[in-house]
Image (cartoon, rainbow, N blue to C red; front, side):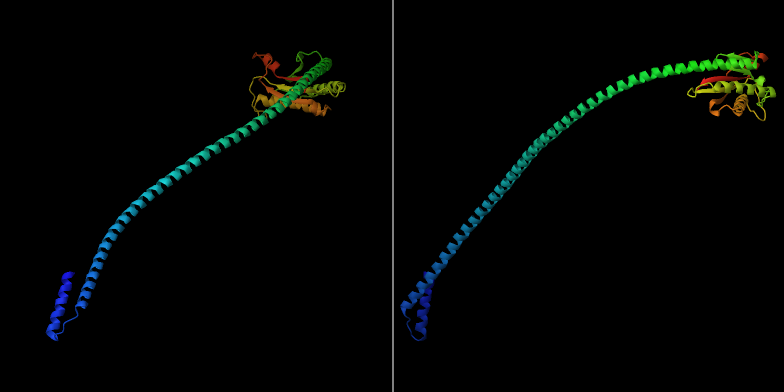
Length: 309
């Protein structure tokens, strides 16, 4: 700076002597030199200050960046801590909720158990009453069964008396004939007494026999009390000789037709239909297991049974 000021002063002095012989004012030159030195110093100081300031700013920016990184790390740590705390609180709240729900469920279960016990007590009471009623009912049933058995036995004895009377009267009417006999509780007539061979149409003699049966039955039925449940069952039987005619395809059909024919004649003679039953057994209920003509004749039969319904 001092060199530059001296150079300026030399040029000013030389120029003045060469042109007009003018000699400039030395104070002006000194002032200008001082000013230039001052400006140079100021610029230098500014440059130095700018350098120091830039370095300080750079250092500050680095420190600020480091501080920001630390703040970010602290913020992340704080966020994690908050999240952990929130999760812990949530877990604690869930556990407490489960303890509360468990207590509520236990209380509800206890109430349900108490209700079930009350229901069980009522059920036991009702069961006891039902058991007592059942015992009383069983006693009544036993008593009723005994009375019914006694009444039935009395009716059976009464019916047996009428049956004996019926068989005795039939024996008197039909006479003592080998083809008409009493077997147990049945009055047995050989089929030839009523029907021709292989037919279900009674012969004239058979018609008279059926009318005699009807007369005896009507006389006895008039003396049987109305509350006695009697019925005359007419059973048709055949022998084991096969039959196959345009009308009867089997012995079963023949025995059924003969039983029905006797039942119809009795009803026509005045017996109530509700007191008559017709049944057919074909050749499957023989009374003689032999295969002789006599055995087959005994198996071809009409049985009358005065029985209860």
